Image (tube, rainbow, N blue to C red; front, side, top):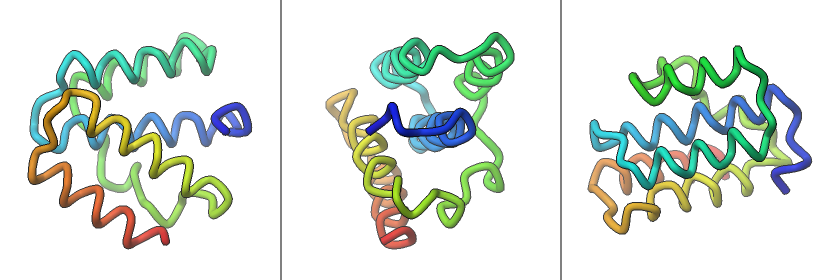
Length: 108
């Protein structure tokens, strides 16, 4: 469950979501909405909110979204949340599908 994530894990999840939002080189309103809902749900502080807004303006650095750093006990949650992100705009780009497949393979 999302409520079980630590603060660092919450930000890690948001970084992954933002990286998938950028997979097709455009962050769509539906994707932005999912991220903003999580920001509210996670009750992030001002610095964290600022970081999230920066991630919505430009994608996270590859070293900030290392699948091997996802805690084993949260990997399924990350996959499900990322999947909801890529389905949110009703359109799955080939790059989103490929990125999700790779993430799935790397963390299972």
